[in-house]
Length: 225
Length: 207
Image (cartoon, each protein chain N blue to C red):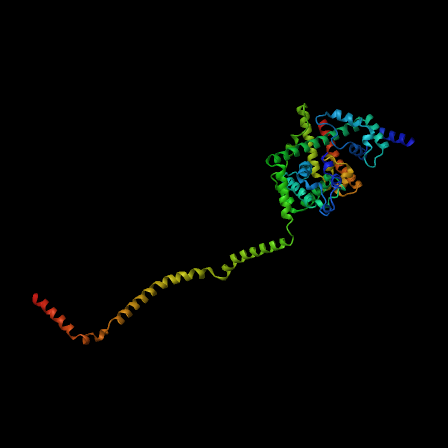
């Protein structure tokens, strides 16, 4: 009893310590300390007049100290004002956070239904439930494809010099045309040579009249003139 | 309400009359009815992740991942904790995994879907209050918003679990897998930081 009196005297003369203030704040019901829109003064009144039974549920804080803190709050305006203001700010923070999150989720929900969400989760679960052994294989195939694509795009440039690759068609283009023409001419010449029964050097011998006929024709032409 | 209907105990009681051949099949879990679980707990999981990440798309993505993980690990849910606590623990683990990566740090800087405090302030409860009162409330919200962002990740998680989600300290200890005393310590420190800045703002407002 004497201890309690001393403690009460101590609390009455000094302000609440941080731990005492926190203990009192935490001992209050956690699911909304006051209704939205309740004025700070009303909240403070309820805070101060909160029954001890409501507060004694807090772990490690006995009813004696809770009662002592409440006694102090009844007589100390400064501590009451600070506690009320802090509690009101925290309550506003809670209400605003809850309202904002609800609005954000509602905006998402407007675009999709709960069953769509569930289906998406289940489909993801189905994908995640695939045998783990297939995953390294998938990665190995992907790695091989990547390496193949990289090698395919890099190696040809390294092995074949671009200048050489470009020079070959140019050179072949400029030299191939005359060669083809000369080859054709040569072949035609050979064909003509082979197709003639008598070589050109032996022609006068093979047809002795041909020269005379030509001469006569030439003579007739001269006579006409 | 639905917590009761989805609790494994109720499922176990209803299936007590099932035959022995049915007993050989995997035990029924609340997550078998995934649609109901998503409908009931998505707002809370999303809210917690959004409060921490402050990025809509990231929060949505991790919310989906939370239910995906829960679905895949549903066989390990024995009902030792509530569905909510179990889901929040999964969400918290995903959050921690995500915040560890460099990718998150990059997106934290460059996120185009990042939440602005002014958007949150539109949900402040200020019916019938004066313009001045609304301005003060907005300023206080911005101060708490910034202060929460400056807290260590562990303090922030615990602070939000308590002061936004309204979890009791033993539940927070269960979600975070920390001792109750450690949870209290983090709350004291987080509140200490907030109280310091809040007092500074109150002093400036009086001046």
